[in-house]
Length: 160
Image (cartoon, rainbow, N blue to C red; front, side):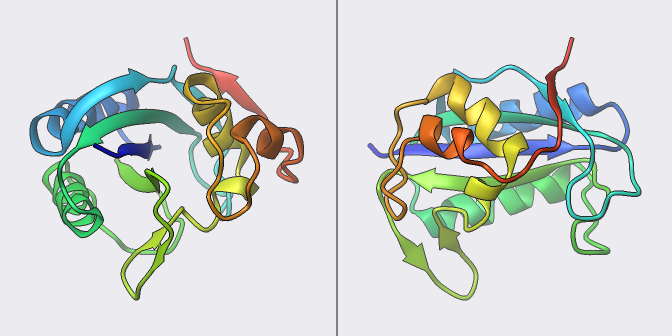
């Protein structure tokens, strides 16, 4: 079974509750969560005039295809109340596919690995916590190396 890495995030409402509900839905509908990073808080990236985000990375074992994972996590977002109004806008939950094993795929709906992950400290730091030696199948660098060379200097803090 391929290892699936998902990034959870949100910046509206009870952020920890939404992340917990997303984890529960993922465990029930996508697969077995085998590793979970700590929660990290960071200022909004991209569109900065909004509340801070909480983020977390999950490692999941799944039998679903990447397309089925995407469809399922989009439904989880919808069920938790996500409304897509603007790119990089505030949201109760966001779930992104970072990696699906060593798969490299680009379709109209889905790009794996996530095309921006190596540019985002809020993604790399929790990913580094649970998979520092994971090798990006396109960039051929470990998560540790990508974090060290990440151009994003936005502060990311452990959330307590």
